Structures are given as C-alpha cells and as structure tokens.
Image (cartoon, rainbow, N blue to C red; front, side, top):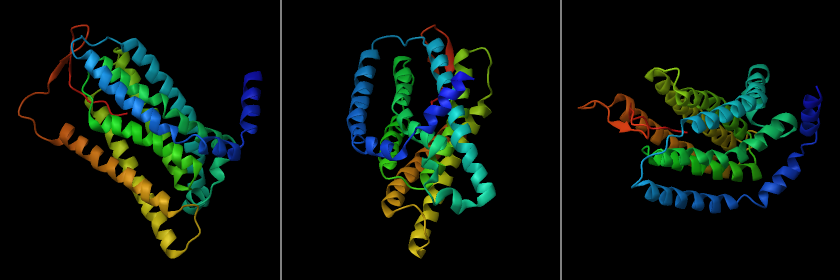
Length: 278
C-alpha cells in the first residue's frame, strides 16, 4: 500500500509544462546519441567480424522481459484510456486535444519518449550475437527516438495514438522475444508473422490518422495538430510502411529456391535465419 501511495504521489506531481520545457532544451541531443549509435554499430560489427558470436540468451531474456513488462504498464496507462476515450467520446475527442499530456497518462507519455533511448540496446544484442542487421532495424530505432523527442516539445493529438499503438505492439513483441530467448517454449513461425502484421497495421493506422489530421487542417476543423506534425509524421510512417511491407514480402511471401539459411550460434547449434525487427 505504501508503494502504491508513493507511486500515486509521484504521478500527481507530474507537471507536463515543466516536462516539455525540460525536453525542449535538450531534444537535439538525440542527434548526438544517434551518431554515437551508428558509430557503435560500425565498430561493433568490425570487432565481431573475426570473433564468434556471444551466447547472450539469459541476458537477452531478462532484457526483453523487462521491456515487455514496461510496455504492459504503458499499455495500461495510455492505450487503455485512449481506447476507452474513442469508444465513449469518439475519435475527435481522443486525438484532437492534448489532455493526454496530463496526469498519469501524461507521465507515461513522457516516459515513452525516454524509453526510446535504452531501446537502442536491442541492436547491441544483434551485433554481439552476430545476427544479420538489416537497415530497417537501426533506421527504425534511430528515427523513432528522434521523432519522439522532437514531438514532445511540440505535442499534437495524433501523438496519443502513436504512443498507444507502440506500447501495445511492443508489449506483444517483447513478450515474444523473451519467450523465444528462454528457449523452453518453441513458438510457431506464425507468431512472428502475426507480430510483423501488427507492425504493418500500426503504420497503416498511423498514416491514416495523419491524413485525417491533414483533412481537418484543410477544412478548418479545430484539432491539436499543425502542418509540421503532418509532414514529419507522414514522412516517418510512410517510410516505415514501405520498409516493413518489403520485409514482410521478402521474408514470408517471396518464394525461395532453397531452404532458409542457417546460422551457427556461439554454442554450435543452428537456427533458421530470422531477422529481428524491434
């Protein structure tokens, strides 16, 4: 009870104005962090080139489980209120105001942006385990990170939808990765297909919401969004939709002349080549 009271007290003290001012003075640091991220990838891949991959399954399990639990809490505090708002008050009420920045939902929206920085560690596991690192993976991580930091300094109503969807998809995705990493339960390939479809659906819904926002701006309908949000958001989501769509086609639909390539892990075991999208 004391812990819950402490958490509620912390949440009640959250001030969205101070949070925006704090990040507004620092958001451009995401570019420095992204530059370090890219350099770390290049150095890491060079370092691992002549070395066997590490067996990091226990660490990977713990990491993915932590992110899955974090995303589950975020889903409870952001996604559930968003869906409830849509069902009870309608779409406009859910995405055309900035009320989601206040209180508990506001705190978890703020935390969401900062969570994109430690999520860059996902790539470290791929590099150290010598798995294939595709462009979509690091491009997605880096651009989401910078977009979230920028968007919070100039928030818009559609951001609530973006956060709600991402929390929910990540809850499922990281739970899947944690289950796969522990190696006890063998999940069917269809689960991975379903997660990729969820990610593509997320990009489609995000793109549609920005088109809806653009139409509201054109028609002069009051909504907490600006042209810059529509432009940068559409650019980001369109690029994701193209890349995720291509990944889905190349991985699950394109006919292969031979069986999937096999990768030797550090323990000598083999597994089918499976690209991880996070």
